[in-house]
Length: 191
Image (cartoon, rainbow, N blue to C red; front, side):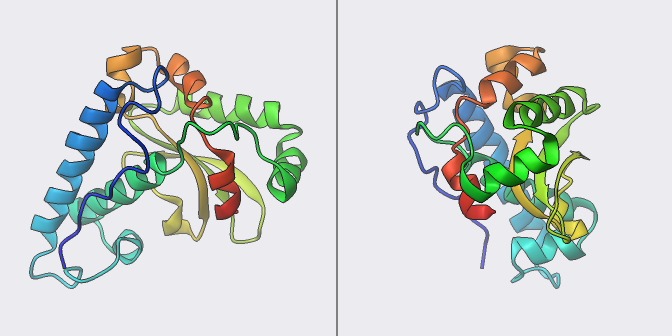
């Protein structure tokens, strides 16, 4: 069964002014779609032809891994956003963040620093580790914490195609804008 580009849960302009419709059109409509097309071509006739993205991420290498992980990572990233007003965590997730990082503000500062300083392209994640603790991880390229047994809660795409149209080379500005579209209600469900 071929992989398909998942439908966005909001209109392409719903995240403006923080993420423009133009960025969504290119990032989701072209880059994300290209990973889907590439993976469909790569898995034909392999043991991954009917595998889930999660299985491919955990078992594959090379181009098959890269394209599967990029589909999963992008889907997860885009599904984290909304125009909701839920811009901070509550309940057990809020308690876990405060316990681990000192405060929500300290968490945001550490996460933003990790996103701004990841060399090259990749992803920064808030992860629930196998022991139940929380961690911020930097993953280059198509890296995904599923490969190490982590449960992804939040990610920030720091490939240039995620922000260049809106913020040019100002990755820290993009990361600051990112917080204005993150829906913590979605992240709490993942926790």
